[in-house]
Image (tube, rainbow, N blue to C red; front, side, top):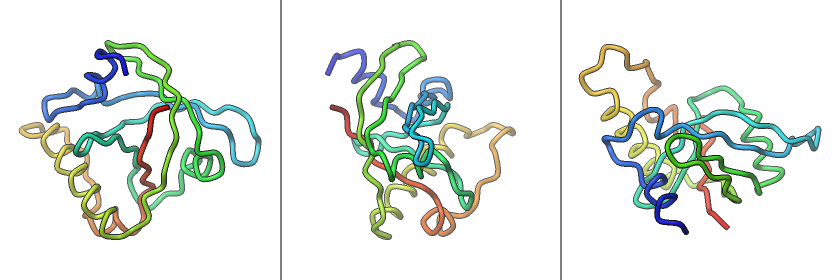
Length: 137
């Protein structure tokens, strides 16, 4: 993997909202049409993850369950369209560990800021959030 891309994927607590924001293009579960959305990604122990706040259903997650291959678009600083595969994380212990680290990262991002969004507790994330590990081809 290109060094600039690896650096862009290796988020730190100092990474900005913009550095965490990417687009993903999935294939629609029902429509079979490409669907591009903006979303945050997270790096936990060198692994890239995508999640969403509970408890709403997410079209992107349904799309990835049906068609796990997708495109991960870096768009801030480094621009690259990366072939990727999503693996749903369903084990409760693994979900808890990963989501706890993600929430810690979000807390660090908003530390000292009055604009931190209110998030549900970890237990609700574990029970109801979409969560996928992203592997790059």
